[in-house]
Amino acid sequence: MNSDQAGVDLLLNNNPFKSQSKSPIELNETRNLALQERCIDLTTSTALNVLDGTFGLREILFSCSESRNSMVSDVDPQLILKLFFREPVCIDYLILRANSKPENLDASPPKTLQIYSNRPEFDFSESDSIDPDQVVELVESDSETRVKLKGTRFTHVKSLQIFIVDNSRDTDQTFLNELVIWGKVHPNYKSDF
Image 1 (cartoon, rainbow, N blue to C red):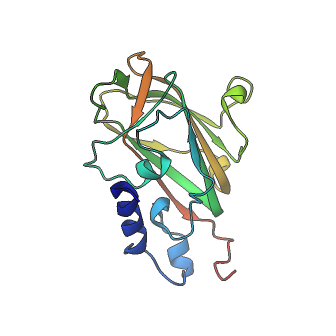
Image 2 (cartoon, rainbow, N blue to C red):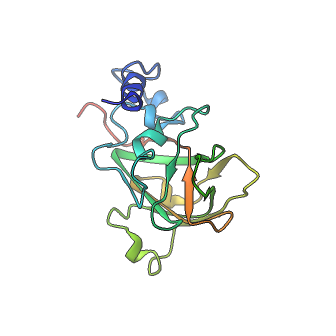
Image 3 (cartoon, one colour):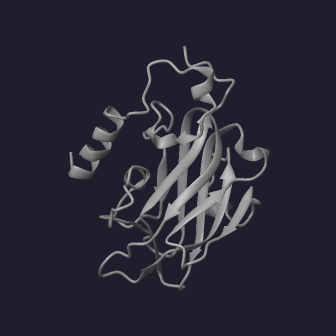
């Protein structure tokens, strides 16, 4: 186990927000979903077109704001982040941080995001034929961007797909340091099962 994975496991096992039973009030609080026990299914969640030797999806979900490590695209600027949830969730907003460019690579922060809800099979071949639920244009000068998710498409989410279309400087590679998903477990979910 490498040190990054050990740090993620330490965060999950020592999570101060972790509780054995969830009260209705707790279910309605907006929280970092990566830190909620049994929320994101890390065995099926994945990222497509990631350069070997750079951070994977798990690492950017559990990254800290001081981290200089990055997920970097491989053959072109595009990335697809596919997140699967163990129970339905309501997603309020995302935070993306791309403020620490990887050394020795000509990579740039993301520019255009296309966000899809509940499209588990989504991949690059469908990116031109399926309309996104939300399109976001990021500003390069913002090292950390909060993206409010709009509409009912994000109120009962079993999977979330984030397609990073291009980057801010038209370089061959895109980098991302951290992704935080803020939301809550769907209120109709019964945690006793």
